View 1: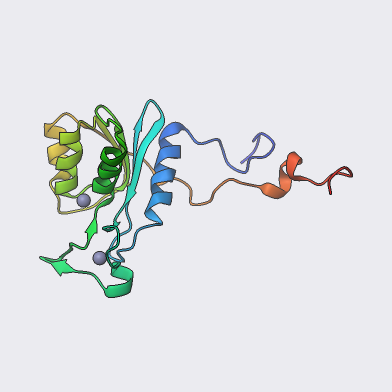
View 2: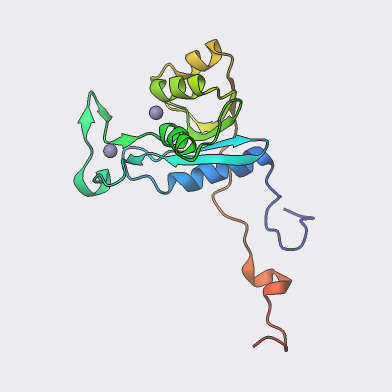
Length: 171
Ligand SMILES: [Zn+2]
Ligand SMILES: [Zn+2]
């Protein structure tokens, strides 16, 4: 990559890439080894809430106690989308007309939840098969944009930021 401004090792991310990357970072907090998902709810380029699939507050984690599998699904965790909607509700943030950035295409239940909450657009980079999510989103007029997975590296080149370099005045 050439002609990047000083301080950059990759191009400045566009908004969609930025929020997908935040969703990926949220997914790092997931505690179910069967799937790590992240969700970021955004309106006017403002983050309203974030979520990842994890246990209820105070409950054991799948990583510690194993998954709680029923009908081939782990039911111990709330999914990322459900936790993001719950966080918004907990904090009193309206999510109508927001965009949901999610790492993986929703399961059917989460799609229904986002649709009912008034989400107008879903941005995702990974498929999650065997669900009716796409069908339900389309029936409800929710726009689905599947984008490439953002780069895994974070462009933070501390050593080359001029303000991070020690000068003679620095202690
Ligand atoms: Zn699990
Ligand atoms: Zn789900």
